[in-house]
Image (cartoon, rainbow, N blue to C red; front, side, top):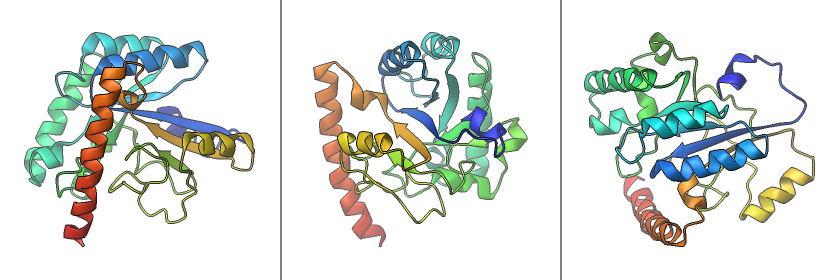
Length: 229
């Protein structure tokens, strides 16, 4: 993400911007990072500050592989909408990351059960004041074709907040096979792909637990959509 933000408009003719939101179990992110390194893929990994996610030795190992490491922030929802409290939490977390890695960009965590959109923090403050160069949604631009596995699909049917603000047109895929076919057709010049490593674990027990979690959350999202409307 940092490389994309600083490149201006000097992009390759076709490119993929690969992002991983590490919501749980840092070990799954490490497995994914190793596979990508073997394949020559450089990605950005955004870590929350939860105990099982913010694991310094794993974060540092992923960075040593050549991947970018970023902060998956959720401070506005944590502070229940209190912007002043949230920005103090944010500053503390930025310092925590900078004590172990080179932090350049950040990415909002959806916090689906909260009524607060963590990106709204930047209506009161500027993340650039913290020496950051980009935010994964707000700095992406509207020309990227965004695909996310949020809600356990690429079609955003179970997606409340995981989108690029202001972008209306959306090319979607219902399955991973459809997404692969889109890439192979060479008709789309760019792909911005967001994944959650826990969904792609090879451990059948953890995969099953995450599947159940998605099932519960997707059902809850449908209720929230009705209530918030």
